[in-house]
Length: 376
Image 1 (cartoon, rainbow, N blue to C red):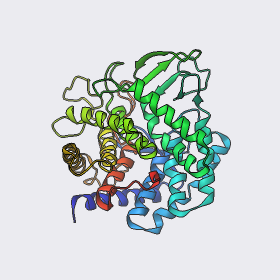
Image 2: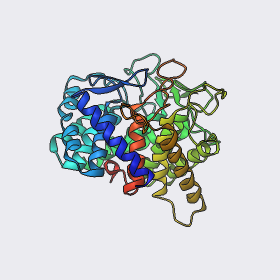
Image 3: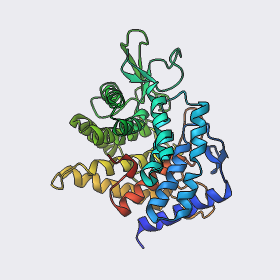
Image 4: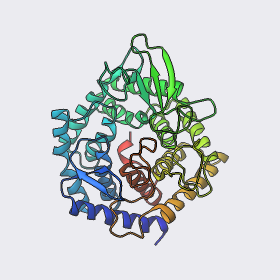
């Protein structure tokens, strides 16, 4: 049994344990090396259901499929009642649940829920600025003209909706938001802003900043990882070469600033001391981004070898030093993820998105380089 197979087997066992121990509940981030299990009212619940679909796709065990399917009504109810959907992470919620279910089973109810979710996301488009607003209502004084790099991973929901309906508005808005992200969130040296502000009335650019990074001019590692994967996915759907180039640029910066064990700290610019938090989730996301990039790189490309070597080193480090394979009762798959260090919110704990992208990377390494619900 190779390293990836062993890690996947352990992950699937923990997913099954969580499903059986917390029926009908969804994980929320807390402190204390555990999840807080509750209702569908945050931005992260799709990752848990997405892990069930990954588990089913990997081993075809009906338990995971039936468990994932059992949550669709819950996600539909959230749409119907518009529970905590005043943010852009509708893509995270519904790509990994409803779109995934439609891809795997062809369930028309899942397709319909995903299209409704795409319309919710579309409603956050601010044409005067050319962005999908990240957080809050349109008249929010702090967030009305704000975009963040995380949104790139929500765009596949809109590209999928375009493929399903043929309605160009989904494609055009996703494409234009990606262009604005490229222009304003990516700095010349390949580093990135977490967030950028625009004037809400005239759309003029104001400033870059951060929400969860070390400081406004620093590079938050999870944001950099979102950018690597997000621009690679934007290229998947549009074949716009500049998106591929931007993903590679961000990947180079990420690789050049890796610490000795190839798993990043929470910000590339934070002073590193003995207790400086890591963010294993950022490295898991970046691994998926590198896997995506490798799909589009020629075998003869010398940079391909570099990306491939770093991918394997980073994933080996996650498996050997950060995974909970030595903790059979653990609820999370990866230790030492960080949520919001400056805000003192879970600076060193399990992150459900880290678990999801870690498992996605493992499955892609073991079964072939494919993320099935991003397929065109």
